[in-house]
Image (cartoon, rainbow over all chains, first blue to last red; front, side):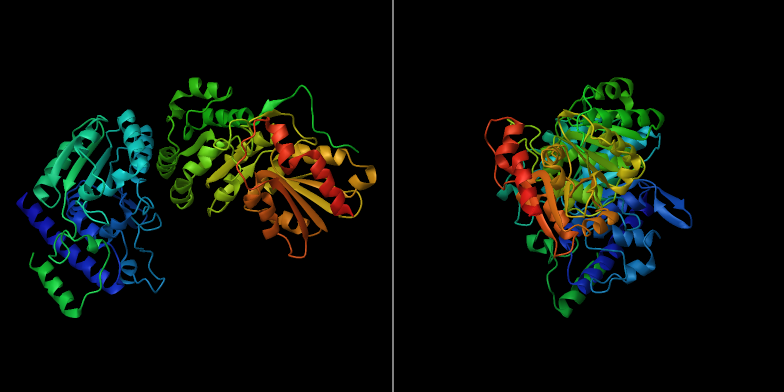
Length: 275
Length: 319
């Protein structure tokens, strides 16, 4: 377990650096949202929750991760690159002004390892429910992890899909709700309060867990518990928007990339290396 | 020679003919699923009760239905989603874009009750803008049935390919146009209901049951006038049939007819696919919400789609 934890820490730091460098070179992106979810992605992909399979010479995920908060799909890219799913060519040539790489700021199903196209909010649980339903019918024992943001709780389609998921009692669909207390204009509590989210989701008979979304041990433990539940589950992960860099943490303006100087860039890289 | 519309004693509903075909296919293919958004049909009962595992009643949730169907299609299933036209087209328009069409998935939306099918229900239930909205989404195939046999043949065609599809059906029962449609017509995307005997003066292009009115208008004209008029049923407006593109450009004048609002009618499609020098007269509903309680026939009469008005326009084009 200690080795696993150490691996999580190393990967977490490495992926944040890779992503930060990309954002800096692309001069755009959603670093706040990506850094809030990256530790959960690390546990999903490196903790053995997402299994892989061979398709010809290629390695592709067997289990699915649907990034319903599509602006954070970018967080999956360096991990999928590290795991050999996204090619070196696509990762290295990802440049918005050259149309060489298949990678985009929002994920789509043409990208290796990305199951569904997302970007518009409120679609992910519906997709996951359909995938979960079909794979169960086909007796395919796969897991579907769907990552949503608290902002998506404002979308009516999210609640429609909670209702269906609950009614179908699908045990292979795992919702991870990233609560970073920030939507574009600030804290939802000060915008349009969402109320008691846990209570609302549990009212659908979806077993709900909570964790610190940056504590690997807790995430790992809760995901293991979720696997044992015979029905749909939800993990409410409390996270920090922009986690890892002081200049970004809990700053709504870092939903989008901001121009920074070379010295700020170097300082940030050092900060990420020393985490 | 009069065009024949009514094969009396043989009235049926497009939706029943469509569903019967899918039901027969689903009995053999367990990957075919039918999702109803709380919407029924006599023919659907067999599906509901005999193929319970392949029938899903999702309640009233068009947005989630399309996302759910897309998830199923991502796993290789062939999914049919069935609901009332105004809701299955516009309520979940973004789901059609982001889910089915963007990912190019095998989901067929059966958009039932197009135009003023639900007459007297008012603007919420009329589907007079679905064509332009759905047509604007890339990757989609759009079929419109003009009679029950065409609906059943379109159903057969939908089984043959796995792209996103919209099938637009009427609500009312009707007879089949003669000569009966065949599978080649569906593959071609159009069929001639009448070919002008003389020079290629005027071609009427329509789709849906509103074609009945064009037929009546032609039948009420004198033989000389009628002999200059062709009538085409545009079964698949997207992708637009290549063969038809050549055909329409061989006519001097074109009259289009459909039950959509003027801002989104079939006329636009024909404009886009013909030479700019062509004279094209689009007949459709006005760009307004219709509230009158008159029944479908009278509403159509009152809103520019009367047989009399079609005749007047034809005569004016013949001059």
